[in-house]
Image (cartoon, rainbow, N blue to C red; front, top):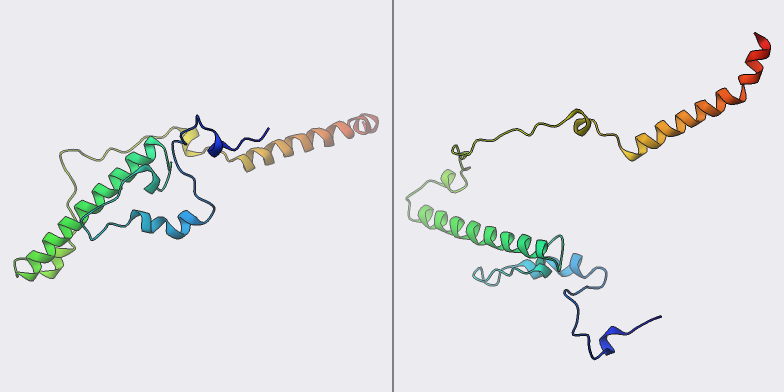
Length: 146
């Protein structure tokens, strides 16, 4: 049964919008651009993943906050450089590692390090089945020869 949801009087719409194929790949970056370097758009529709969901809204909010901070820091360094307070090499200097929270390596189990792929598992199963068929078909001939 087909239903035209937009004509149903009791349906107010969906929780997100869906674009036709190609729209996000063509216009997606324009949705995420800041307006005049002052307004940073963040909403689940501007997310790269999970568009329309809470995870997408969080992702978009974090992206907009990073863009705003980067723009402010870059602008501050440009002003300091133009005033002669810092050298040009200090404008793009890398930040030192945060020592209060040391980097901890993540220990992986043997299975996590060498997890087999689906293709590998299918190849192993095919080899086992092939060997079983091969030996079962020649089992009678070997008994006659010995």
